Structures are given as C-alpha cells and as structure tokens.
Image (cartoon, rainbow, N blue to C red; front, side, top):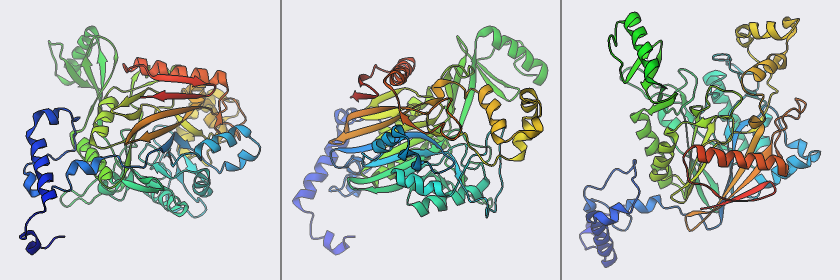
Length: 504
C-alpha cells in the first residue's frame, strides 16, 4: 500500500496517461459496444477512485503461456484403481498417453471416496439412484493417471452424506488433486480452486443444477446456521404443452384447487408440476437470479486470481428426447445462456457434465463450450449398495429373477440399467478434449474418440479405450448432429481416424 504522503508528491506521467485512457474508454460508447456484456462486472462509477495502472479489465485477461493445453473428460464414475489395466490393455494405455500430454487435466468426480471399514457416516440413496462409492486408493490412482483438478458439485456428492463428502475431500487432498464445488457453507462451495501448472495458474468454479434434495450448501440466515453441501444453481422446470392440453389442465386445476376456472392460462402449476402454453411439447427452465449472480461473481473472482479459468456445471436438465431412453438427450436451452454469461464473466472454457451422452460443442468468443461431455469412467462395479435400493426395487427383482432374494448388487444393477436407459451404445461413447490456446484464445481443439466397452465383462466394462475408426465415425457424427439440433453453427471439423480437429 502507498502511504498518503507519497501520493501528495504527484502522480507519475505514465499513471496520468493510464487514467486518461480509462476515462476515455468509460466515456466512449463505441468502445463499450465492442466488449461482450459481463454479468459479473460491478461497473466503474468513478475511475478516479481506482489505480489507473491496474485497470479492472486487465485482471480478466487470459495470460497462460502460449501453447497451453487443457485436457478435459466427462464423468469419473470409478470405484476401484484402474491404471494397472494399461499393462495388458493397449487401448487403455493409449488413453493414458493422451491424458498425459497436456498441461492440465480435468474431470468431474462423480462418486464418494470412502474407507467403509472405518467410515462413520451413512448412505443416502434418493429415488432409487445408486449410492456411488470408490475405494480410497482411487484418489492416488487418478493422480497417477494425470488428473490435476476435478469438479465435485453433482447429484452424487452426498450419496454418503456430509461425512462422505468430507472424507472424499480428505482423500483427494492426500492425493494432491485440486477440487471445487462443495464446502462447509455456500461461500466455500462457490469458491474457486486453483491448480498451479507450469504455464500458468488454472482456476476452476464448479456448480450443479442437479443435486439431491437438501444437498445445496447454504449461507447463514439470521439465527439459522449455514449448511455444508454443493454449490447449487436452482432452476425451475416448466413442461411445454399445446393449447388443448393446457385447456384440460386448467379444467383439472379448477376442480382440484379452484384456480384457472373458465380460462386457458399461459402457465399454471398443478400436481407439483409447472406447465407453460406452447406450440409443442418440450421443457423450459428458469435460473434463480441470486444463484446466477453468486456463480458469475465466483467466476470473476477466480479469473482475477488465475491466468485461465474453467467453469463447469453438472446438469441433467434436458431439452430434447428427454423421455425416450433409446435416444440421446440434448442439453436444456438455458445452458447456452449460462455458458455465454460465464465466459463473458471471465471463464476460458465451459464444461457441462451430467447427461450421459455426448452433446453439442460451440466456440464462443474464442472459448470452447461443451454442452455434454458424457462419461469417461463408467464403473458398474458398485459395492456396497444400500438396503433401501433393494426395497425400492423389489418389483424389478421379482420381475427379472426366479429367486430375487439371491440377487447381488450387480443382479440389482443389471435390470435397472437395462430399463433405465443405460443399455444403449451411445451411453458408452466418450471423448477426450484437448484445447490449445495461443495469445489468450483458442487456437485448436482436438477431440479423441473413446469407447467404454459396452457388453464387456463387468471387470473390464467402462474402462476407456481409444475408439476404432468406425466407432469414432459414430461419435463425431453424434457431436455434429447434436450441435445442429442445438441451433449452433456447424463445427469446422476435420477427422483422421479416431481424432477430430476443430478450428475456431
């Protein structure tokens, strides 16, 4: 800090020039119009109160060294160490070689890491979903594979309660893997985390729109204390319905709750669902403004303290083919607004995980956006599963087996996978992305097609291997088709075998 007495000795000529430039930019509507809208920008009211030699906008510049490459994958649903398979599986060894070639490696940690011999918490399954868990040795195995930082805000972060969330943090810390997206209160859950790479400081901000009930971290409110949990983005879903359906819903609303009588409203809520009048069926979502503001602020803060920033959301929110398990789902439309706002706030790469299939890709202001990274590890070996999963699925077991009382955890998982949309080839299509940046902007994006071994024995299924040329063709077609369905410009993609290159 500069002492007051030194200020009175005058401002250097360079500072005066800098101040003049700041004032000129603030007063120039044309200069402002060239900049993208920044929802996290507090706005400069009085430039004279700021240091002209350190304008706020300079701290949002991307300053990693030229040639910086970020490698990213999707959901890490992994339950046991896997790197040992590289010795006998050349395809997996090739995957590990790709993972190790960049400057930083990211994935979404979608499981709890627990030593159940000493664990003091409890499982909390919800709506028949699996309580995912991994052995403690998984953390160091992921580090051995090259993972530097992970997101943790997702719907499996509290499968084993707050205790499981905390123990996962301890194992990741012990392995030296940076993480973000959960915390002891909402401030800590929102906070960016940082990985120190050789080419610059990399920040990550993690949040989720899909999470277990009451898993969202909370701040203190009056006498009510804060709550540990995930960094949550609250969204409200609306079912789009045509006029004739809305008319029937209005009639039901009139009879059940004495509202919307004699009218066809633009929107209504009944049976714990929200409906909107539209030309066709579909889904819409609105984002909570408070959550948005806090997330954009975290992104801005993260970028101010880093040379490069990754923003990532875990979301199951779907916009197309949401109710047909035989078709890949398309990400909800609001994610495009969210991604653009995140980049305008300072993010250099935006990654959406959650929907278990590949989604669209967009290049926005020289920054890559992935609207669906699918899975990367897909472990169907899950030991143990909690008792209530067996209770909730007795009918499934009775229908599938002659002696359902003999069912193991896999015997339970097998029919649930088959009936729940996890028995389709596109679930086992994956990618590795490697984004290379020059002069603070995306220069090249390489996509490696990956196969997760659909139909292999349980001990080998879900382990990524580089895809064959034929499998890669289907994977790249899926990405291009999804990009078109999402209303985005065609990708400038060239394909060589199982690798595609996208240029801005």
